[in-house]
Amino acid sequence: MNKKTNRIWLIDFIRGIAIIMVVLFHLIFNLKFFYEFEMFDYKTGFWFWFGRIAAIVFMLMVGVATATVVNRKEKLAALKINLKRVGRLLGISLIISIATLIIFPGMTIWFGILHLMGTGILLSLPLARLRWVNVIAGVGILFLSEPVGGIEIKHMAFLPFGITPNTFASLDYYPLIPWLGVILIGNGMGNLLYKKFVQLRGPKAWEKGMAVLGKNSLWIYLVHQPILLGVLWVVF
Image (cartoon, rainbow, N blue to C red):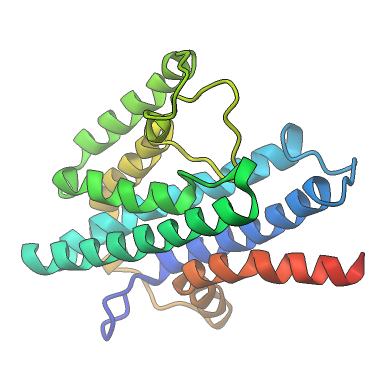
């Protein structure tokens, strides 16, 4: 742990790996979606699972980070920090929804990964200090995915829960079922491993570089797609 900032470098390190995976996956997505590169199919096979693993790692770290905040801070201070995270994520999510509604009206991002992160942190706060309760609740939500996905509905009122019309389409969609389950499992992991996190050795030089990426992963996430699309537009 960094004693000056109370940040746990290993969490940032893992986030750094995940954000690199996200950037690479979105490069593949852009080549297929916008430029019709048939060799890159992000809906099945290797690249599908590559993107899913990146998202799973990110959601686990959301839960782990939430738990470590409540373990290292007094209750009120921890609540303020986590609510600040929620406000930032949901504020940015609102901007993304408005922007995609204007630019891609048929593929608007109503509940993407940042919507999930903000809402997931908020919903996980009542369980934030618990261990196995989080893990059990998280696994239970994962098992709800298949029956919930089979529900047929004609409106979008239950969109955040994974219940959508057959005609629904979005550039980015991460519903609470099953993804809140991953966050809760991460929350449980953060509580179970907190003492080990505190006792971590300091990062090596190359680990520090990856941790810097992880520390700034939100801002990298926000700017990487416009940069990728701009570069591809120039190239093609």
